[in-house]
Image (cartoon, rainbow, N blue to C red; front, side, top):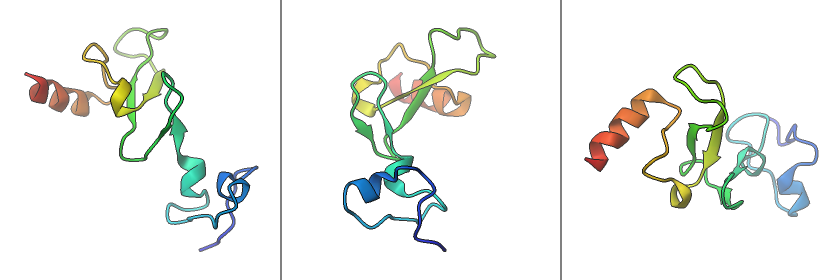
Length: 91
């Protein structure tokens, strides 16, 4: 496995840290996304992909990355199975 991240610039290198390459050719810091509502970096296990309101309909391809804190009851998860499980938990 290589220790060189393919992102340019690599977020780990910019932060002065050794890239964590456990996920492949891109380091974990470069894989992290920012919440599209609050801007905070989302941990890989805290990311919620919801349907984008600008791409309505069941066959829409657009989604937004939202952190757990910004996820609303009215949001619909992009993954149908996860959404069904979430709705059961909310009932």
